[in-house]
Length: 92
Image 1 (cartoon, rainbow, N blue to C red):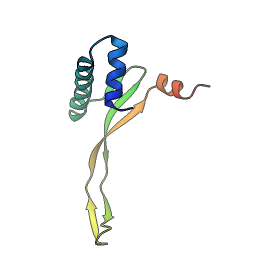
Image 2 (cartoon, rainbow, N blue to C red; image 1 turned 90 degrees about the vertical axis):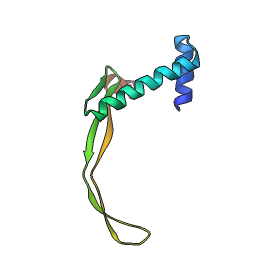
Image 3 (tube, helix red, strand yellow; image 1 turned 30 degrees about the horizontal axis):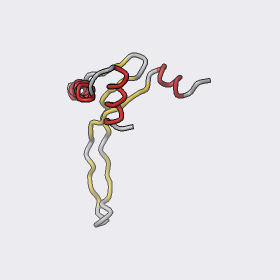
């Protein structure tokens, strides 16, 4: 599923035009992104939590030249599924 598919589903279920549904999705993703930039945790009840983690740097190698390179540390987004999402995916 991609953004266009999600937009179509939201428009159908909410009974709104696709343009408006796309705008709502954009607002939601922008709000999550802005919170993560501020190092805030974003929790959506029964779905999951978005956080920022730091991946440490390491020594790598350039496959083209074979030389060593330093890969710097990076901030990466992390999603952890909530309990309801986990149980929906793994019914027992």
